[in-house]
Amino acid sequence: MSDYPVRTQVAHHVHLVRGARRARFPEANSLLIDDELLVLVDAGAAMAHIRRALYELDHTPEDLDMIVLSHFHIDHKGHAAELHRMSDCEVLCHPLAEKGVRTFEGMVDYYGTRGHRLFEMWRHLIREYLPHTMDEYEVTGHFSDGRPIDCGETELLPVHAPGHTLDHTVFGIDGTDMLFLVDIDLTRFGPWYGNRVSDIAAFEESIERVIALAPRVGISGHLLDPVTDDLVGRLTRYCRAFEEREARILEHVARGYDTVERLASVPIIYPRIPQPAYLVFEEMMLQKHIERLQARGLVDVEGGRVRLSQG
Image (cartoon, rainbow, N blue to C red; front, top):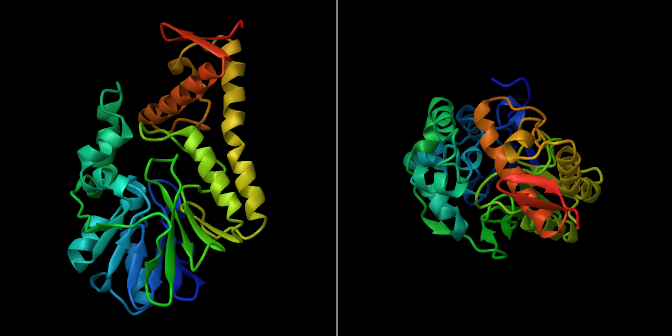
């Protein structure tokens, strides 16, 4: 069992279920709402942690009434297929998530990894460490942006926040004073947008939308504790990562790192590449930045070579 508490109450009826490995990928936090309905928001925490949290509240997985998925990623849909089979509960996601949630092939299409030189290595890692995410998932319905999900005394408010992925959604808990920020995660790594269906500009806009809500408490998908100290400041600094990364790209292009592959070898976005397969995502994110820099007239790209614009 974990060396930290698996479950902590964050609001009336609402409990944070911490992921294993300090909630670092491929783990993630979940929320458990123990109200008139027993609702799990995301299912990426270790199954042992989900079971333990339910047990501490005198429940079992079979008691679940609903699973709400924030987006299609493997560390968030997680154990939803298995839990659905055990409980026959509802499984809700954003309409744009369904393709990526239901099947592995749909998820691969959203990830955009097929065709990359390291695709088979990446798929092998999934098969070895996260085989349950290659399962077929049921989706029984959709939630809508801004339309509350009634759990009893507790309401979940979906706030569509794309950019990380096209379907990524954060959730207000009885309003927007407390938000489950999911993968606007406030980690030291910063924003992640390494999929075909990720978009940097949309990510920036989503963070700005969240800031405009002026939340007091932010619950990350990958931090062990809710953020209560200067949350808006933390979000603002988190958003600066996009510009900081582009500055590093320009610096390294000036030094002769003139292809996506050479920039990825530094690397620019990941602090280090723990497995070669991670280069898939480093390169995708770099490509998105280079396209932005090219659109702004800061770099020229010809034949896959990147150079600083002379204009």
